[in-house]
Image (cartoon, rainbow, N blue to C red; front, top):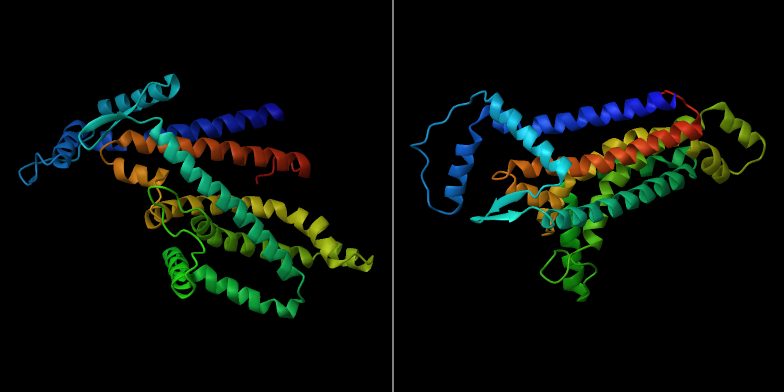
Length: 316
């Protein structure tokens, strides 16, 4: 069984890695990227400001496609230096790329942890209420969930500015500058909607578990509601939380770019956004740097849950 699981994990990792290489090199398959990049660099350094005379078509350039994938694979496996073009210069991608990556992952990690705490705490508080009094929290959940992400960020920033104008007291730094980064407010904003989604999924799972016979039996034995929720209902809802957590994690990553732009954070997503057009390799490297840690995290979680819950080959 362990050998089969190891092979399955290795196969999933290999297939996803191949997929990232295939997707990251797609521009080289359909376009003459060498000439395209040369033109973009000329536009970037203002030596060319009119491209109407240029003519290019979509082609199938398998040689360049395969060559670029092999080049990327060689760089990844051997650790060779990657250079990227910016403002007329060729600069080494690392360590700068690693620095902005760690900055973004710091925000992401803290926000995910806070979202988990928020979601679990709200779920327990709601479940401690009588059934007929849970309508208000559910209505509030529906309203918050329906708000656009950018609206939440702007309202948070405007709220801090309003408090500062009224009290001359700055609660949190609302934008990163040269000397310091805004930390508290971006983390709170990034964790809010993922926390709401975790709350939603856990609340649904808790309410489903509450209807089962073992809960009635536990109540019949005189166990407190809080003890039943913590020791029994929450334990049986962990699988549901894990299944939905992958989507929550991807949702948080998708919001990183917007967060970095609005809070003026020099992060991983903005680096890719600003430099990825002239340097297609950056996107591929970025995908690998997100995929590998998340794959390890979710695979470890899956193996741990399969072991402690004794669910064998059941998909989770």
